[in-house]
Length: 254
Image 1 (cartoon, one colour):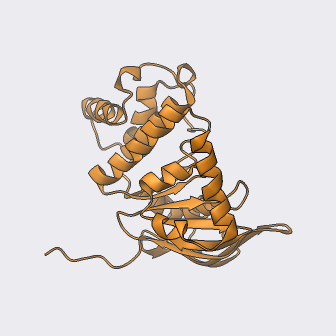
Image 2 (cartoon, rainbow, N blue to C red; image 1 turned 45 degrees about the horizontal axis):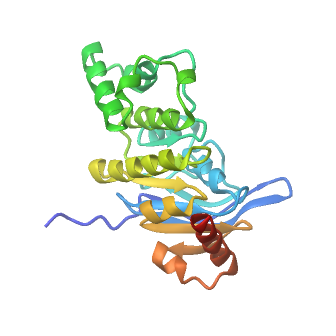
């Protein structure tokens, strides 16, 4: 029997963050186990993306403890954070691709940075990753030639090129059509199963959360008002959670 890992890969313990008078996160706690997908839900401006920025070390929490890859990164220096960012990578909402590089060169970028591989090996890996995310035939195009959804797929391929243990997705289905949203959701789910990735998905897309989430954190007015499975969330007595679920049902009916 393989040994079961009982330590969370990521933990927020009583994390608070304010910008001036605006308390974005107020003593928020949740954890993510290895190989688990946790979705962070809530309205715009409730600190969903700020949580990811804190996990990557781009922002510092005002108080609380932040554990990433099993290490307390709360007071890490930039050098120490660089080592963490080799294990944990982020797919930004805008894709953050290099405009002047082709799709293939964008995905090759993290592989070239490591300087461990020959060009031939890099090309093989790039083709494999582009095939995995369904955009292999776009290898020689520039990001400006791609739709928003395709850019996201390429950004996911580039994130995977770094061979991370954990991927953070910031609103992966926002501003894409419903079919592309479905394809991106299927892709994120497949990658989790194939690569045993630990993931956090920030979203306000309830269907995406239902498809992907092992557990859900619901943020409202800076607090985590719910943390549990999607099925448990459907039974939550919190009015704002029920309002979110009802709005989604209306969208489906429409």
